[in-house]
Image (cartoon, rainbow over all chains, first blue to last red):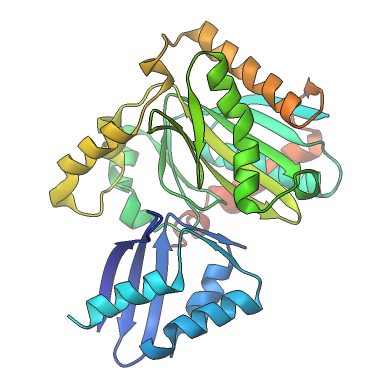
Length: 90
Length: 249
């Protein structure tokens, strides 16, 4: 099932998710006015999340970030997870 | 030494110039550079991570002759109209601190310049400069090959209604409320002093002087080098003027 989600992080940066999710992530696109360093990491993060179940979302996201020295400003895996969970459980 | 370049250009030119300078600073072929520039025509720039279709009314921009460009840097959508835009490019090794500290350090000369003309500006993390709680300047930063690019705006005046004729809002039903909210949260130099050509020149001279003092170097004015100019032209054609770049997300 496809979802379009808009939400804000506690620090006020907005993010949008285009998500195809059944019992796992089939595709995901994360956009918004946050910062990620290096910027190109976003593509790898999205690729890493394909095939992931919601229970593993935060760990998968955070593992990639830690293992690849990615810096996140204005966005967190937890904020993304909560926004997806809220929409998927409606 | 800090090289100072003043220019005006299209959206693609402005982005290509900064990338060409970054690459030349990385190669050791250019000095740290402060650029003060304007946009001709007016432009909507979006952050690297933004969805162009979600953020920009591309048809309206085309109708109004407004350029659209994706930046190398993250952050939000910006309508570049009546402002002074700056970019500062410097090797990371010359600025101590983490990302957030570097945002603050490079914002200092802008804040000082506004203070010098009687505007009580201050830094508001992550990347804003505010006056009495209202945003007068925003910026965004990237680091590539150990070279920092931070670019930002000093709003001289702002037409929020014109801005939102080009930008989309998350919820169309809330558009009036959102526009009202933005008007309450944004300010500009013209809210404090009369803006004319003399004042604009004064602000630019203060920014140059304050960057020189902040980063401990003298400033000299110089155009792009020949190789920077060649690289700029290549970047315009191969990157910044392409749908591959601008519509990638």
